[in-house]
Image (cartoon, rainbow, N blue to C red; front, side):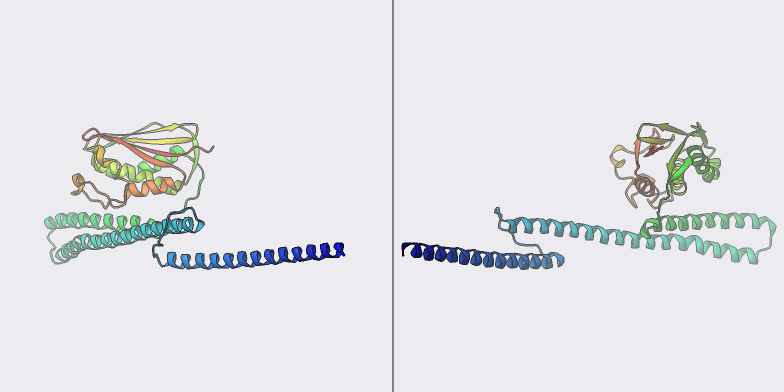
Length: 307
């Protein structure tokens, strides 16, 4: 009899334990579903960029809200930057249209005069004016194309083994006419080495640096180009004897559309150096500058030395 009572009591206790476990499991499942519903609600609020109210404690719910608020803030920053860039591009295009309209109108005017005026002594002067205005128009259209490279994701690097001397010589040939007009001499020391880089886009970057050096250098000056190989990188160094860059502006010159007040009278839209930085970064490299006012500038193009 006592044994039967003991067995009944044991079975009763077991049933109670199973019931408690079942209730606990059901409550845990309910808490799990509740938590998932809360997370879904928080995600909906985050997608609509509504900041989540937080009571700072050690609960996982507060941690989730804090992380989602960080994501919301990052999203807002990126959206603001995107809107700012779009406004800058629209401003750029508007500026280009305005600046192109004047030389284009002059070309049409001088061409009309040339058609009506057949005097030989005037023809040369008018043709020179047409040529000058045509060059201005060509320059602004090239700047427009360069600005569109990044907007349309046209920069797609194809890294292959190339001769570094070929890169430098072809880049110098592209700007040779501009250098000759100012009687600027290139001092080049060939390195006779190869490296892996995208020839087309790296040449575009170097041309931009050389073009800047020519533009802001005086006549009869010198531009020195040297190549140095290190363990992890190789460096193309371009040194000019130009107007130099104020130290406080050196961190800003690689930003898109940035132009110093000191060179606003010169042709340019502030795209070249930004393009240099982007081209190098997409190949795992970087660019830096060392300069001071009235003492010239040295630009350093670094690319990985992967050979």
